[in-house]
Length: 257
Image (cartoon, rainbow, N blue to C red; front, side):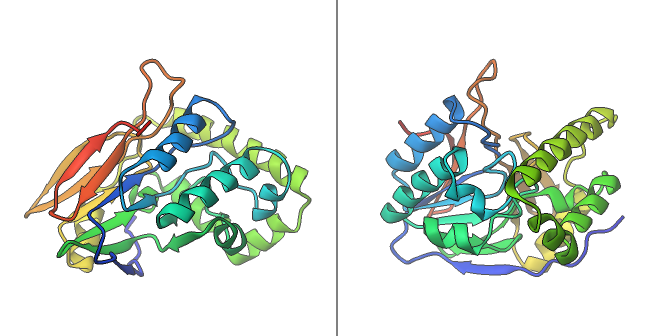
């Protein structure tokens, strides 16, 4: 299976930015230790902008979920406060691709295309969630294409909120069963990563999704850098941001407190 040619988003950093934070895969499901760490980080970070590269939520069943008491409305308030202090950008992940314009506008978020070519400090960086490049899992890629089709989305969103929430739980269970049946975790395909970097005219891909935070040398001066997932209830706990500086440095940092 081959990756479709991507339609890149383009974003140029503001001239005054000195650093940005990149994070992904918090999979927020309840107001637990992970939620608290994320909330504190957004309030305390020294970065000039925040980029959330997908799967902030374990599941997102529609923007109307934020209009009733619960985690979605709590997250909305955290994001509103954060975006009042600095720009906050959001890229859809495989779990929260239904985050829409209503929620984004209410929270002050700027939606990013997947992938987006960021120009910052005279350099360029390709930002992605990463799931579309996991070519070793064709079953998931077919499912991804299905649930992102306008017909599927319209049919899903026509259902009452409680029914959508129940369907999301069923889809999460099915996803976990599918992943456990795979002989190995489907990682980003190296050839696909090289291809998308060449198409974008840059040498570094930064993505999430795989939960394997490491840097990969792709050869030919190309590399891909993987963000950490967050789980403060795990043993040991996991939570990390990548801070990208205007001079090109990258640092992996714990959440600010």
